[in-house]
Image (cartoon, rainbow, N blue to C red; front, side, top):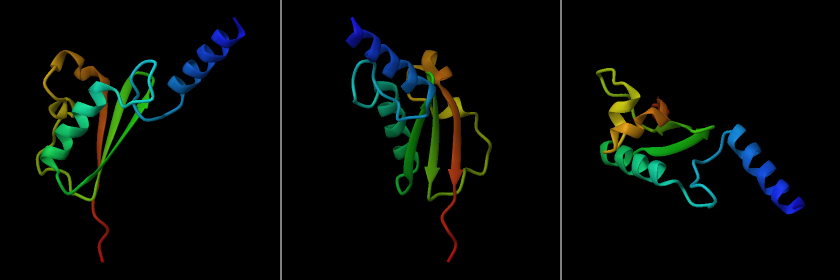
Length: 99
Protein backbone atom coordinates (compact mmCIF):
# COMPACT_ATOMS: atom_id res chain seq x y z
CA UNK A 1 0.00 0.00 0.00
CA UNK A 2 2.80 2.44 0.82
CA UNK A 3 4.52 1.40 -2.41
CA UNK A 4 1.42 2.44 -4.40
CA UNK A 5 1.41 5.80 -2.65
CA UNK A 6 5.08 6.39 -3.45
CA UNK A 7 4.49 5.51 -7.13
CA UNK A 8 1.51 7.86 -7.31
CA UNK A 9 3.51 10.66 -5.69
CA UNK A 10 6.39 10.20 -8.14
CA UNK A 11 4.02 10.20 -11.09
CA UNK A 12 2.19 13.32 -9.90
CA UNK A 13 5.43 15.16 -9.21
CA UNK A 14 6.84 14.23 -12.62
CA UNK A 15 3.76 15.66 -14.32
CA UNK A 16 4.18 18.98 -12.51
CA UNK A 17 7.86 19.37 -13.38
CA UNK A 18 9.05 19.90 -16.94
CA UNK A 19 10.52 16.70 -18.24
CA UNK A 20 10.86 14.65 -21.37
CA UNK A 21 7.46 13.57 -22.68
CA UNK A 22 7.18 9.98 -21.47
CA UNK A 23 4.70 7.26 -22.22
CA UNK A 24 2.40 6.43 -19.34
CA UNK A 25 3.98 3.91 -16.96
CA UNK A 26 7.17 3.78 -19.02
CA UNK A 27 10.53 5.53 -19.20
CA UNK A 28 10.26 5.56 -23.02
CA UNK A 29 9.48 8.67 -25.05
CA UNK A 30 5.74 8.93 -25.66
CA UNK A 31 4.50 7.98 -29.10
CA UNK A 32 3.17 11.51 -29.68
CA UNK A 33 6.56 13.00 -28.82
CA UNK A 34 8.42 10.47 -30.97
CA UNK A 35 6.27 11.32 -33.99
CA UNK A 36 6.63 15.05 -33.35
CA UNK A 37 10.40 14.72 -33.13
CA UNK A 38 10.46 12.80 -36.44
CA UNK A 39 8.29 15.47 -38.07
CA UNK A 40 10.55 18.30 -36.88
CA UNK A 41 13.70 16.42 -37.97
CA UNK A 42 12.16 15.97 -41.41
CA UNK A 43 11.69 19.71 -41.86
CA UNK A 44 14.86 20.80 -40.00
CA UNK A 45 17.41 17.99 -40.55
CA UNK A 46 20.42 19.93 -39.25
CA UNK A 47 18.71 21.06 -36.04
CA UNK A 48 18.87 19.70 -32.53
CA UNK A 49 15.34 19.00 -31.31
CA UNK A 50 14.46 19.24 -27.62
CA UNK A 51 11.04 18.31 -26.29
CA UNK A 52 9.71 19.07 -22.82
CA UNK A 53 6.41 18.17 -21.25
CA UNK A 54 4.50 20.26 -18.73
CA UNK A 55 1.48 18.37 -17.53
CA UNK A 56 0.13 16.93 -20.79
CA UNK A 57 1.42 19.77 -23.02
CA UNK A 58 4.55 19.42 -25.14
CA UNK A 59 6.92 22.30 -25.88
CA UNK A 60 9.47 21.93 -28.67
CA UNK A 61 12.76 23.78 -29.13
CA UNK A 62 14.49 23.67 -32.51
CA UNK A 63 18.16 24.61 -32.03
CA UNK A 64 20.64 25.61 -34.71
CA UNK A 65 18.26 26.89 -37.41
CA UNK A 66 16.44 30.13 -38.10
CA UNK A 67 12.65 30.06 -37.88
CA UNK A 68 10.72 29.84 -41.16
CA UNK A 69 10.05 33.19 -42.84
CA UNK A 70 6.29 32.77 -42.51
CA UNK A 71 4.72 32.50 -39.06
CA UNK A 72 3.21 29.13 -38.34
CA UNK A 73 0.90 27.99 -35.61
CA UNK A 74 2.54 25.26 -33.49
CA UNK A 75 -0.11 22.81 -34.68
CA UNK A 76 1.35 23.11 -38.19
CA UNK A 77 4.17 20.87 -36.96
CA UNK A 78 1.96 18.23 -35.38
CA UNK A 79 2.25 14.90 -37.22
CA UNK A 80 -0.78 13.16 -38.71
CA UNK A 81 -3.36 12.78 -35.90
CA UNK A 82 -4.58 16.38 -35.76
CA UNK A 83 -7.11 15.55 -33.03
CA UNK A 84 -4.18 15.36 -30.57
CA UNK A 85 -2.48 18.53 -31.83
CA UNK A 86 -3.71 20.36 -28.71
CA UNK A 87 -0.75 18.76 -26.91
CA UNK A 88 1.76 20.95 -28.77
CA UNK A 89 1.74 24.25 -26.89
CA UNK A 90 4.85 25.91 -28.33
CA UNK A 91 7.59 25.60 -30.95
CA UNK A 92 10.60 27.86 -30.31
CA UNK A 93 13.60 28.39 -32.55
CA UNK A 94 17.13 29.07 -31.34
CA UNK A 95 19.22 30.26 -34.30
CA UNK A 96 22.83 29.16 -34.71
CA UNK A 97 25.45 31.13 -32.81
CA UNK A 98 27.11 33.68 -35.05
CA UNK A 99 30.91 33.47 -35.27
